[in-house]
Image (cartoon, rainbow, N blue to C red):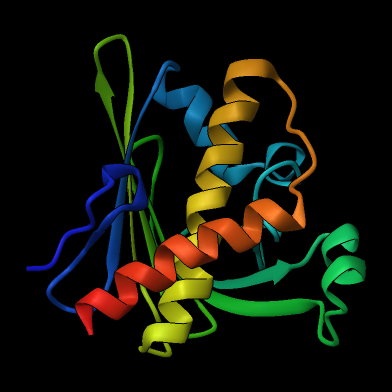
Length: 176
């Protein structure tokens, strides 16, 4: 199995996914709210997470509408994407499929806080997708951590995005 040199970049899984591990200073219930409630997601994730019909059961249809600032910044033509809920086991496991990508969020109490594991498998395998999506999830997790620690998140500058993508491009190139 190939791993990255920097653990914060995640590790490449044998089946083509990427796994990120973060140790957060907050209890699982607080982290869960940040993962599932729009009032928190708006600060660190590009979309809301809406369960169509409201029943959080495996197989439920999801709508993942991009936040207006994301639509404007990235000139997104179709601002509402779709997915399917795979698991909702509050506050330990959240998993969904989003336009072909699978995201699995696992939370467990750890040293007075939470060990958060995000495993993701990309619907479009390949170096370019790993570069863009890997960097994207990495930055999302950094903003989640900042939100939980400070209650706010700074603006994500283009230079930070480009630098993070370059780190992931190097990993993708080495693993190819």
